[in-house]
Length: 217
Image 1 (cartoon, rainbow, N blue to C red):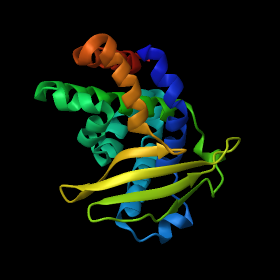
Image 2 (image 1 turned 120 degrees about the vertical axis):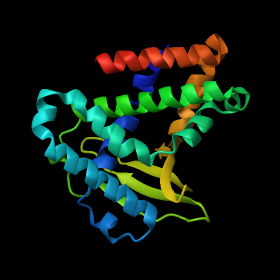
Image 3 (image 1 turned 180 degrees about the vertical axis):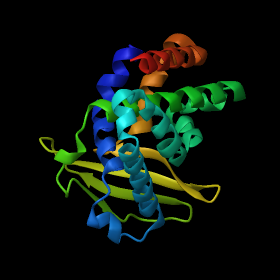
Image 4 (image 1 turned 135 degrees about the vertical axis):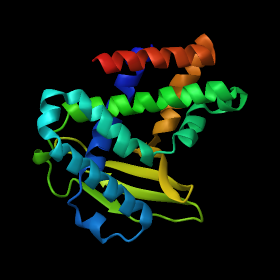
């Protein structure tokens, strides 16, 4: 169940997020003055620059994109909060060691799936200039919502909202809603089913095995 659930359920998310992260030439982003949106732009610029700089290496060794994603994109995500939300009630009953192991494997899962999508699914040169539009959202004391709409050719427009908050004086993403559906909530339903059948340790072991398979793909 685990092997098929992830790919089928989240392929659209990875396609959309690939466009969001890599698209950097949009006036809506450049004109925005809110810090979280600026950080999203800076991150996408850094990622696109790295892909261009190491293009020759990546053509021969595409798995090196794992390193770029891990170093550039992953630090922008608050994995502890995302992991807590993805586990739901099971986070409260988990031991410190289980939380640590789950957070590590969940992070690896997201990094590897995103990297595989990045390597295989999109030719960025074919995207129109208006593929994505960022709009300012309501800002609270420590939380922020960044709203956007992604227009992928031959696909229906998709609304993508980033849940961002401040962690150690830095803005980090802890959830993403695609078409109104929360990424961590969707994962939570899959994880809850796995925990019901195999326990939390069983889920963590299956995640670790899945990550090994993805790395070998």
